Length: 166
Image (cartoon, rainbow, N blue to C red; front, side, top):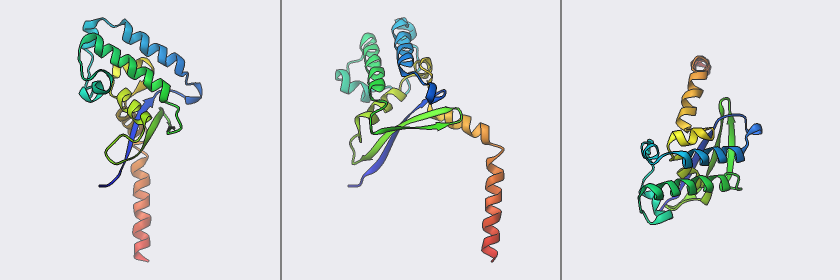
């Protein structure tokens, strides 16, 4: 049996030095509580599935149970985002919170679980706290540097080719 490195991420938008977690926490909770049942259920739930419900309410699924689970996930993330097994990386369009570790089939840490569940929430909920998907961050990064990467890569390849001829 082998071990794997597991990493869970949450993207944040904005400068980390001006990052007010209390305000972001409050904004997300207010949004979730204010949604009508119809609007709440019409959110794109994507990866939000039984794996997320099970630890909270034994897999029960209903309108109020789902809202309660979402609120618990939000609270868990904000309580665990700065544990010692987490870090952040700043990038031009914001940053990414990271957590993870080695896993032999189980979860590497409590923070890893919190990040994974939080990142599984619908994007409309995440956006209320100025969070977003890591995939969107990747696309923004590629868009910003698309004209620079090929030139640098081309120059490096030419250096390697010249070195091979020596």
